[in-house]
Figure 1 (cartoon, helix red, strand yellow):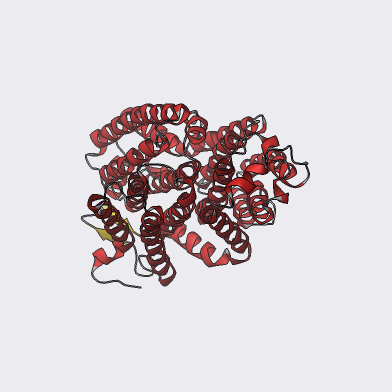
Figure 2 (cartoon, one colour; figure 1 turned 45 degrees about the vertical axis):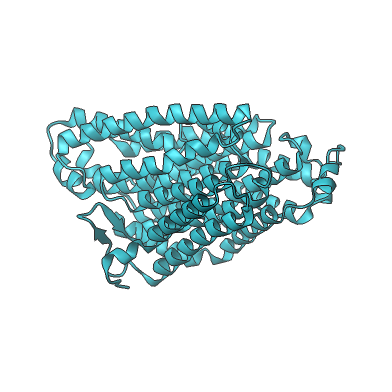
Length: 497
């Protein structure tokens, strides 16, 4: 569907900007306000409206049936992939806003919290539409700076402050490496627009400089997606951050890293043009295998549920890397590429829901070890059903959309002639079932160990409960309804390749 004027295609991003300003105005009028439901309502309305607009655009073919919409000389590009990822960012942000109502009830700086989440979502949405390396860098920083502050939001909690500081320092180093890589690529190509770079680097004699530049840019993306070898910040940041922020960073922020990685490598560095400088398909195959394996083996050794989820999210990043690792030029290339997008869509709901469940445990003061969840199903059966869905869907069992997204990834690896990559995915998924099942066993089989009385004392957090249940229902519904998005994802992948 054509849309006029062209800038209207950026409506989801503009909605987020308007609501971020509205939160700023509300906070300016009454800086001491602790009207948490009002602030959360404004933030959730903003992200929810942006999600609906992006979803309507996506399903009506904006930027797809008539080709991608290019704005400001190609600095921004709206197409099927960018809209699909904006739906992911805004849906995660909406769940986090709703889930934060109870979590922030006794805390200060509530308006700042919601503003930072909204601004980070805005930055991620701009990352999805970035059409040049300059826009990529600016939008990446717009998403990253609020995230650093959000991880350290619990100012009186030493773990939160330390996690925020480490996240900031490592993030600053990664940004510097990323920016230096951009400068090397610019030195070779003389352009920052992604399509112009692809044209300029084809046949260049400066293959050494180009190869180092692409490698440094890869390191920047590896940090953002928590992929090996720049993954070590993730467990510290996720454990120290407020649990809703752990959900936000591990789902939306990771998806933002992947959408930029996908666009930059496919559009700016087509393997046929840069093969003499660096074989990035082989590089991502190695990264995918190591990231999957390191993340899952580390998760299997954890006794802390939050750290287990943090390491498992590293393993999940390895699965999504298959989307680019399978671009071997053999078979249906759009299958694995689109499957990577689908997995991020499903992962956004099941991983966000799992971390919000952990937030509920923190609200009740249960603790973070597996045994702290013993017998929880006797007190909160509906939430435990949702958590069971998240755990088994993350493992790839046919109880949620995670089963089909992994199935498409497996098909993509076979089609691309890298079946062994799919075999590693299957082995790691089997391993992940071991540690995900530990949570389910504790909730449903083990007897309570006397720490559940706090639930009766504090009551049931309605916002968190609602967010967890909605995430669980969507995860289940995506099993039969994934066809609504699979065609869009595969078409978006085919249009980009």
